[in-house]
Amino acid sequence: MKKILFVSSEAHPLIKTGGLADVSGSLPKALHELSQSIHLLLPKYQDLKITEPLRHRCMIRIDNREIHILETRLPDVHVPVWLVDYPPFFDLPGNPYSDAQGHPWEDNLERFTLFCKVATEIAMDRAHLEWKADVVHCNDWQSGLVPALLNLEKNRPASVFTIHNLAYQGLYPAEKFPTLNLPKQLWKPECLEFFGMLSMIKGGLVHADHITTVSPSYALEIQTSEFGYGLEGLLHHKQESLSGIINGIDTKVWDPKTDEHLVQNYNFNTIKEKNANKIALQEQLSLPINKDIPVFGLISRLVEQKGIDLVLECLPEMLTLSVQFILLGSGSPDFEQRLHNLALLHPNKLSVTIGYNESLAHLIEAGVDIFLMPSRFEPCGLNQLYSQRYGTIPIVRKTGGLIDTIEDALPETLANNTATGVAFHDASAGSLMEAIKRAMILFYNKATWKKLQANCMSKDFSWEKSAKEYLSLYAKLLD
Ligand code: ADP
Image 1 (spheres, rainbow, N blue to C red):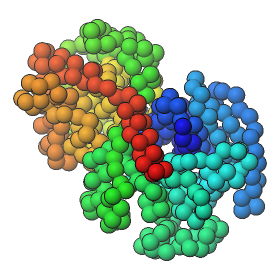
Image 2 (tube, rainbow, N blue to C red; image 1 turned 180 degrees about the horizontal axis):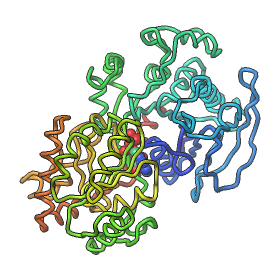
Image 3 (cartoon, rainbow, N blue to C red; image 1 turned 135 degrees about the horizontal axis):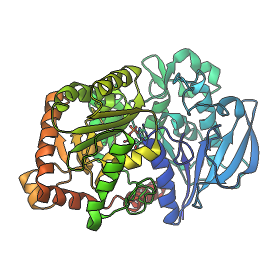
Image 4 (tube, rainbow, N blue to C red; image 1 turned 45 degrees about the horizontal axis):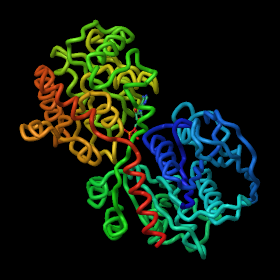
């Protein structure tokens, strides 16, 4: 049994802004089920949805600040969660990184630096918790300083740093470094310094014993200038200790057989029942009721990474076809406005819901026929996994985790029952439109469509396999 400290800035269902939360909620659970002693470390935000008992564990002083460590559990499971309670930094309304208007908190650097210092103290068993980690597993830039700080320690735990999205690096003005009370030796180009900026993510990339990405293809892509953001040289240099492990999904939360957000549960044997969700969705969103029309869905942060500009370019042509399109998302005000305007012009074909809505997301996954993920890059992607489990066929761009999880429907993959979606190559509206038309042809061929649904719904997306891969990585590092 290994003692693992899993350090993350968000974890479902306590708090979530994106895929990082899904992973941080499910992977610790899967490792716990593999009999590991895992503790999840999170900041104690105001909006945490805590349902289990909460108790005080200890107080530590860092940089003249009094920080309390509280303990709770992930809802319904026995994964202990330690919460870093420092109200001036974390007891704020809004999401972990920004206020209600979407402006990043001005002191994010200070907030997550403190979080990393606390994680290091806990990992080294200096926080009066009587628990010393064997492995510290850090995630994204918010925990990037932990491997750097641990590297300055004797008898330290092994460290793993997972990149969930290299586009977010925690870059701050260099002048901030002296204000953070960090060891001076961390300030050099082969450490936190990055072209005159302070880079939080570099702390993890340079110092972790091993770097993982959330898919094997993304681990290769980030070693190229197209996806590396200037870090490709460093990542290529570290290729021996860089690998990809594909994300699983929480198969209890995302299960069409039991999902309580659906109006009708189903499995492959009762796939016809899926239509009840389609009709409920059409009703709820005031679209014409029509169980035979192909309905496309998209749930996403509305940012360029997700190819929303390509969708906007395609929509005028797409909406001349006999289709419906249901979109749920929030993000760039420009994308939100343009989508909203188009929906006003096409109320019978396009439904746009701006906002974050977990329940509607589940109903969309069940109710639509085809799910769009035309991402420019995608470290892993989760919605294409949910879609497959719900018998909803994904259209994806061939990038990152989408390459690793979707087999394009071609004559040979259809013949050998491996096809699970429609994949296209170029990040262009033309290629996306072609893929949409290809999916529609498949949709109208009922036998082929059912075969695709069978291929998708019989795949194993559970965390167990990936958790075992993480476990053997930890074992290798401890050897
Ligand atoms: P990313 O982490 O880059 O946003 P992922 O596909 O890895 O993308 O994960 C996104 C997660 O957030 C999925 O669980 C998706 O369903 C969810 N999500 C994104 N936008 C919304 C929204 N507006 N409402 C509900 N869920 C959303």
